[in-house]
Image (cartoon, rainbow, N blue to C red):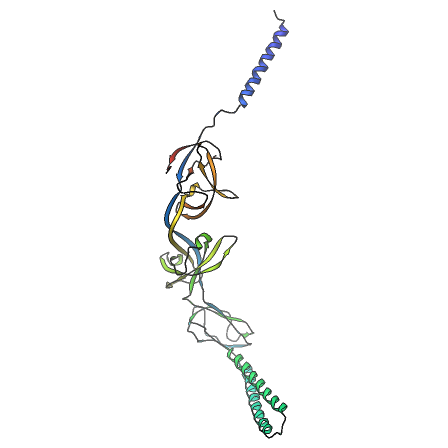
Length: 349
C-alpha cells in the first residue's frame, strides 16, 4: 500500500501528462485544407471594334490676339465683344500724325537725294567730279529710300485690319487710351474653327485615324449628338499618363456652340481580333497586373498579364494568356497561389 504522499505525487504527474497531451494536440495543424470555391471562364478571341467616350472643352483653334506695334493714341475702336467683323475690315485706328510728319520728311529727303545724284551724275560725265563723290550721292539716295520705306511700313501699323472673318471675343482698350508698343488691344476668334481636344490612351491612339467620323454631345445644347471628325493627332505621348491628344472638329458647327463649353466625344475604332476576359478576373497590385487560373492539381496559380482596352464588362489581354485558357472570375476573397480550389460554376469552355 502506497503512502498518501506518494499517491499525491502520482496524481500530479498524471494530470501534468494529460495537460501536455492536450496542448500538443491543439497545436497540430489540420490534415487537409477545405477547398476554396471559385468560378472560371475561358479567355475568348472576339472580333470587335471599340467605342469609348472622352471629355473635353470646346476651343477656337483659329484665334488671334491683336497688338499695337507702334505707340499712339487710339482714335477709332468701334467693336465690342460678340461683334462679327469681315476679313480686311478696320478694327483699330491709332493717331499717326507724328509718324506721318516724319514720313513726309523722309519723302523730301529722298527727293533731294535724287536731285543731287542727277546733278552729280551730269558733272561726272564731264569729269568735273570724282567717282567718290558720285558713289556718295548714290549711297545718300539709297539711305533716303530705305528711311522712307521704314516709315511707310510703320504708318501701315497704325491701322489694324481683321485678318479673317470672325467674332470679337475680348476688347481691352477704349478710344482715347494711349497704347504703347505691343499692347494687347483685341482678340478675334473664328467661330467656324471650333474643336475639342481630348486625351486618349496610347493603346487606343494607334487605332485612331485622321478624318474618322465621331459623335459629339454638348451638355449646354441638351446632349443631342452632333457630327464631328478627327482633325489632327498630336505627335507626343505624355509619359506620366500614357495619353496623347486628339483634336476633334465640329462639322458643321452647331448653332449655339461656343468656346469653353463642356463636350463628350464618342470614338469608335475599326474591328479587330481581341483576347477578352471578364473585367472582374483582372487583378492589380502596386507592381503588376495578374489573373488566377487553376492548375492540373486543382490549385490556384497566379499568372502575370498585361491588359489593353476595356470593352464593356470585359478587358483585352495583350500578353500572358492563350485563347481558351481558363481564369478565375469569382471567389477572389482570400485566394492565394497554391490554395486548393473547387470549381462550382462558370463556363469552363
